[in-house]
Every structure is written in C-alpha cells, then in structure tokens.
Length: 224
Image (cartoon, rainbow, N blue to C red; front, side, top):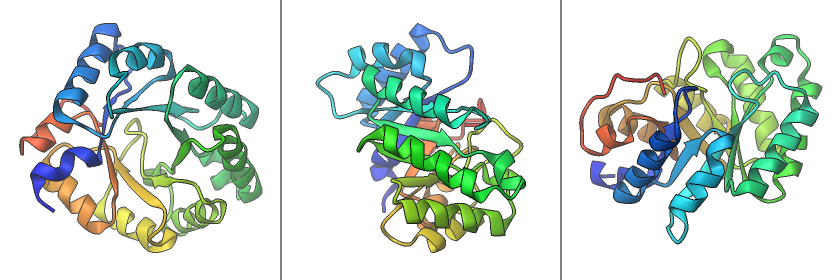
C-alpha cells in the first residue's frame, strides 16, 4: 500500500480533556479535507461533530468507559446507547483491565457482551490496553472478542504507559484471524510507524497525528 492511500485507515483523534469546541470543529474540518475514515472524540462532542460532518463520508467514533475501563457494565451500556442516540457510528470501549488481572474472565466477557448488545449493530472496538497485559492475557482477551464477533480489537487508550507495538498488532491479528479488525492506537505519529502497523495486520490507525502521517512527517505533540 502507498502512503498516500493511508488516510482511510485513520481515526482522526482528539480525546484529551482540554479539547474545546473550536478544537473539535478544526478536527472535523481536517477529517473532511484529508478524507480520514472517522473522527474519534469524547461523547459530549458528538452533536457538534454530527453537525459538522453531515452529508459527508467521515464517520463519528466515540469512546466508552474511557480511559480506565473501570465503570460498571450498566454504566458502559447506558453510555453506549446514549452516544449512539446522539449520532455515534462507531464505539471504542475500554476493557476492564482490573478484572483481567483478577482472573475474572467471565466478568470481562459479560462486560463486552452487554456493550455489544447496547451497540445494536453499531460497530464495536474493544480497547485492550496492551501495555498493561501479558501476552497470554492479550491472547485470551482477543479470543473472547473473537467469540463475541466484535468489530475490532484495539491496542491502547493512549493514556497509559505505552501504546501500540508491531509485536502486539501481529499477536492480535494472529489470534483474531482475518475477519475481525485490528486497530493500532497510541504512539502512532508518523507514516513509517503507521505503515509498519498496517503491514503487521492493523486495519485501522487511531492517531491525533493523522495529518503528519499522511504528509510523511513526525508529530510528537500527543501520546495518541
């Protein structure tokens, strides 16, 4: 794949707390100009993004249980329904890492399952926060997601101690197989890194550095 075709892999992202309405408007304008696949924003900004992106092909992606994944399942499910009602077209939920570390895999499965049910057909990506997991935990989380037939597994929130790695992307792809998406997010700030992730099996890139990526530049302004 050529670098110039990478735009449709990118979820153009603005998730830090200080992002204001002008930042979201700028994000949407950039997504329209470069024809990124989506904008990824916090739920409170969905109505504004919907207004800006109407009549375009740019989708609205939002985050659920973000960034810790520690909300109750009922709260995650309600947040999902509310986000979709406002106009979200893709949902990125954070897995319950604490339950993984407790060995509560049934709780992890039910948490994802209830959010998937709340999505009611809207595409769901499950954020694993791979930097906090062992390889065995990544595999088991991916196997649960594969069994539930979620849309994507995703590496990271970009708000923790590490982001996407080529090794983890390859492991996730190998585990979920060819029919579930794999999203690399966290620390993807240039075209070379983005291409390495895609070559390892990523089918989507979450990045605040989308413009730098499509122009072959480097952007170190954010972890996402």
